[in-house]
Every structure is written in structure tokens, then in C-alpha cells.
Length: 305
Image (cartoon, rainbow, N blue to C red; front, side, top):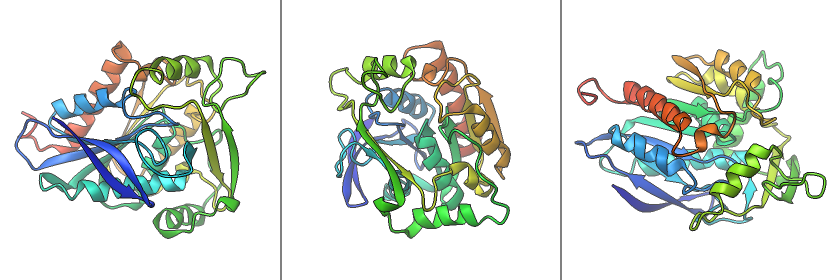
């Protein structure tokens, strides 16, 4: 069962869908949101349906400034803001009487994986973490032997002043384009162009082929630094041949090794976008693996029977 919902984050109303399973409450909750510029209609609703069928409630929402969500400037990705969205989504999820606030998972795809990772590191309400094809950066994080860099990141998410002057701004530019010489885009591989134009142009997606990217400088956005503070169970689903420059599998595996809690690493075929095609064998493999991990860590043995 799916219902339209909305919640506040950073002065904007975010548009979401709440899925309630056909099982006795209280339910665990999985919070999902897309990566770079994509909207909730483009394929994550299919993941939500798989999790719902497994007995999990799901909150799926569009990022601030994207899709059906409010907020200005439009089409701007800011990782500090998107991290705060996850925390506000957790808070909103706990207002449902049928949700168990001790069994909440955050789920991220591509760029949103970084925000999900950071939130799992700093928010004790997170009971499980799932990331797929995580875009955690081109290079492994800098040395942070005293933990000061990751602490500055967590402080920024919790309460820091988000100052555009402390960031590099790229765009506005197309999300994807078929001629990089004539008009460079944020995502350059042909696989990105095929997926976004194939799914984003479907009726009712609210997707726009434009994006502005905020790249923080003070402090820098390096989500892998926060991995040592993730103590909840975590599933990393990584494509060994990921073609996206900022989804470097070496960086993802480095973050995985830093995780402090129980963890599972699964290689997934199909490159960066293979598991975003529905129906497909890769989608079935990814969603089944994630559903198994989430039910094992969020449902009691009796609930899984």
C-alpha cells in the first residue's frame, strides 16, 4: 500500500511516498532516495515494492529542489543539505505510529550513498545501511589520523552554516548529453545518457536535464572518512567496472574496509546503471540481495517466517 506524504527539510516541503507492508506492525522502516538528479518515479519505486513485499515499510522521497519536492534553488545538489534530508526523513518516519523507531535503515544509490554513509556515522537512530554503486569520490580520502576531518564533516551536517562561498559551484549544466565536445554534461559516459534519457523522459517523472553541483571546500565532502564511525550493519553493493569517475570502486572498497560494524560487500555486474534497469536480471539480483540483508537485520526471526 502506497500513500503520498510530505515532510519539511531545510525550509522546503519534500514530496514522498510511504509504503506499508501487509504484515502486523510495528514495522521497520527503510528510507530511500535517488542519486544525481533522478526522481522517485524513475526506478526506486520498484525497489520500494520489493522491500514492502518482504515486510518492510519504506519512505521514498525526492531531494530538495528536485522532482515533486519544493525548495530553491532548483536542480542544485548540495551534499550537506541532502545529508540533513536523510535525518529529517528519519524524524518524519518516527511520527508514524506503526513504525518501530529502533529499526530504521538508510539506503543510497550513487551520489546519495555518500550522504547515507555520513548519516549512518553520526545518527544513532540508523540501524542498518545499504549503498549501491556508491559515488564516494575519485580518490581515497586524505589522511585523518586524529579524526578531525570527519568530525568537521559531522558537525557541518548536524548544525553547520551552509555557505555557498565555501564551495566550488559547477553548473548549471545538462545532467547528460550526447556530445561532450559541443555541450559538456555533469555525467559523461554514454551509459548515463542512455539511462537518464530512457527513464527520465517517461511521463510523470518530473525529471529535468539540468543540474548545478556544489562541491564543498570547507570542510571538503569526503564521505569515506566517516566510515569508521558506522557501527550498524552495512551492505556495500559495488560494480567492479563502474564507469562513473566519482564512483571509483577502489574508493568504495576503501570505505568498506573502514567500517566499524558488521559488514557485507557484494560485487554487482552491469556497471553503474545496470541495477537501475527494471525489469532485468541485475535488478532482481540487487533487490533480492538487499531485501535479504534488510530483513536479516531489521526483522525478528518470527517476522521472517
